[in-house]
Length: 156
Image 1: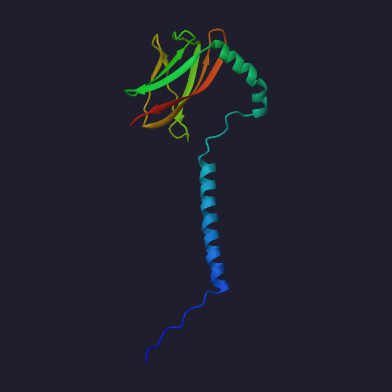
Image 2: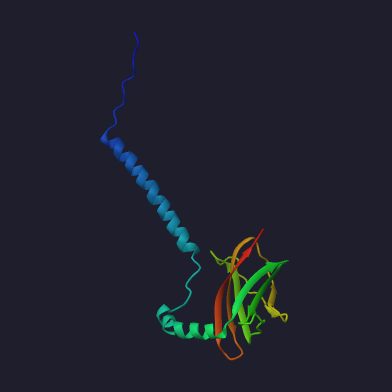
């Protein structure tokens, strides 16, 4: 005489628990991702986007008229920012400010002290491998403001 265990029946209560558990996991993951996204968001680009948009075309046209190109490189704990004119000649600006940081967060932001060496602006910087951004603002000798975000890839 062999006795078999009775088979358990899958009821509506079981289905409710399975679907409830699945949705709880999905909602929990979404909440976790949303909280981390908001907590690591570095902030706004401009304080008032409407005011910034009113002057955008004027600033862009003045910047394009300068004909400058900007390139960034990094080596030997130094970052180099080369600003050249239309003919490829180095440009010495009246004023240069920049923030060097990661593209995704502000924890590694640094403000390099760029010095013009006759060809480019160089500054000491501690950079790990990966993607970096230089958010620079330069003032031409005629007073025109030139702002640009320069992408810098550092190999490890």
